[in-house]
Image (cartoon, rainbow, N blue to C red; front, side, top):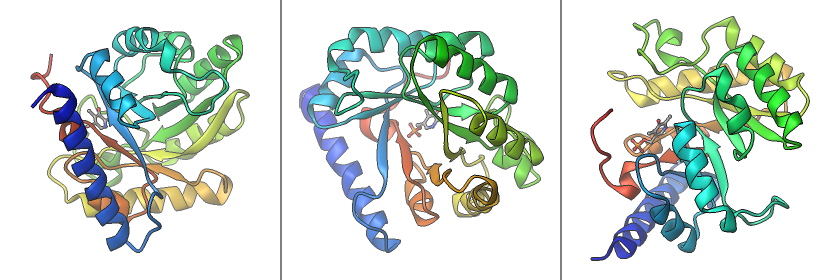
Length: 243
Ligand SMILES: *Cc1c(COP(=O)(O)O)cnc(C)c1O
């Protein structure tokens, strides 16, 4: 099969999985947004996916994301309509905020107030608006050893970061994001995320979205109410080994 056929078949299989998970959870069809994580794969793959109807793509490194967004600028819709939306999902250094604010529609990995402030300033400068998910460190929340390099805010810091985002111009607090830690049942991890989200919504009722679930655990995420699934390898195939 050609790459085009491979991608289309894998996308269709993933959409089936999502639809089945929505049914199993008693949720409305289409109540989750599939963010296709294209990190490590070329812009040509993103173009194929866009042609197959994908509108939301996720990237975790600024340099790579910025280059792809520039390559695919013809697929963007500056009016915010039906164009390709870039979701930044990786660890983000404050000094990259300005770059990310130039192309991202949403940042899922905001885990400190300093980063929130940097993104707000960068978005204002770029005359753009960014959706923000506050990333939660579920390993810490579950009392496990920290997942090195995963990032995420823990405890009261989640609320502090949410307050900072909600209070900043040019940012919109959309909700929370997390990655299920290794070695824990995703159901248990995502239940903890849902509890944290409830707590945040007491102060920020509009922060109703939840970014959770990847190739291996999307069903568990849909079951707890995830609105955004970040799926990479199930659609694009196995990534090259970590750098
Ligand atoms: C890479 C990545 C994903 C996608 O993971 P898959 O297992 O390939 O679906 C989702 N979320 C984050 C934060 C990632 O870095």
